[in-house]
Length: 269
Image (cartoon, rainbow, N blue to C red; front, side, top):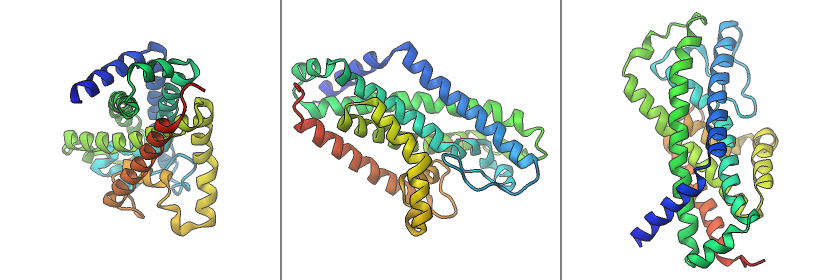
């Protein structure tokens, strides 16, 4: 069984190793990492109050940026932006199998459908690890360059850099995997990448903001807020342990839905 799973993951990695797809995913991630650092430090440089968190963005304060963890603050600040990008590419890869009819051949060759979906999740998680690494490296290059003109004392950034980068990588990776699983689950149900991407973007930009305004007591437990807290290593309203537990719960529920639908659906329709 382990050998079959490894072979299936290798197959998925080969099929998803499309230059346009991977370069697009990496390019958008790099762009988001650059933009959030520029905007984040420009806001602090202006000397005004930290603006209210907007859709997909959580701005840190000057004090937060001056801490050792400020080196990777951009990763948590734009966690939802990175998340929507990841959701989109997981959904695109998943829905393409339906749209091209490849899913029929895959199911015929490997009737154990749980193995097919599990291998896809693992393969996309590996690509997500690569994307997370690129985001961290981009942040490592851009943040010090932009921080120089902000007037913030970032000397604390030199303290235990490897540990700070490793923690930032792990937190962002965990959050992105959950976002990706969301995209995969919606794509399996809808069999459309367009629907999955629309749901993801619409949720981040509209739905969660409306729910938070109407029911503030549950707003910090919603997926977007939970995953932002997870990427930041916890925040003022949701601790890291709680964010990690909720993220794991969201992941298990999404995978359960995807597996149930994929197992029961008539692939020949």
